Length: 203
Image (cartoon, rainbow, N blue to C red; front, top):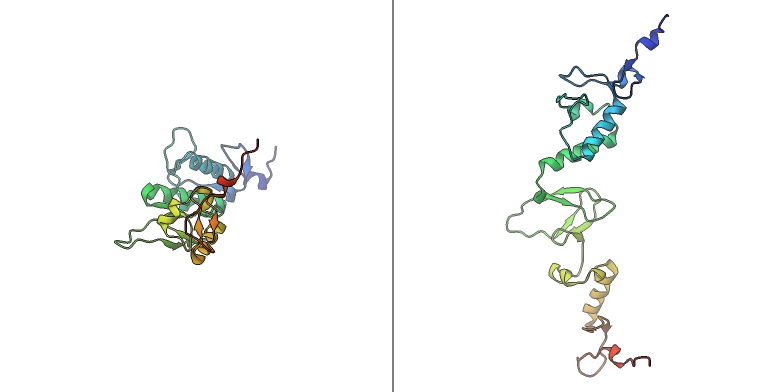
């Protein structure tokens, strides 16, 4: 049987058992197991990263040859390369030196830098360019210092809640210690009696 010239140039992938074009086959440096297509190597790398393994080795059983990121950069999808780079960065940077952007639609990994005696609070994410508080690990809480912010309940830390607090501060409103409602004093003493004390129970 005569083999077509185009078919003879195809290379066999030992993982998916399919014949691929030569430019789809990835060569692993210093390894004889080079017959893997870029799709299979891509899935192999993703699986290893998902298992928190950053030193990716040849998929052949018992082979410990390391696959270098740079040798795969042109063959693998951009998303896989970015995942691999991020995993390598996480591996190099200690847990105490890592910080993540508090905005959920960003969550970029940032590096904590020692600033000597200077305490850094207001910071800008270099990726999404939004302000956040480096001490509290939340979006920037303008008008409220960190100590005051930490004393707030979880349901009082929203942007609108902080705006109301700023308004209350500028207008010198008091706050009921029981129901937490803001009260404007127009006359009389500064003592606040919660309105809930005046509500009669339903009989």
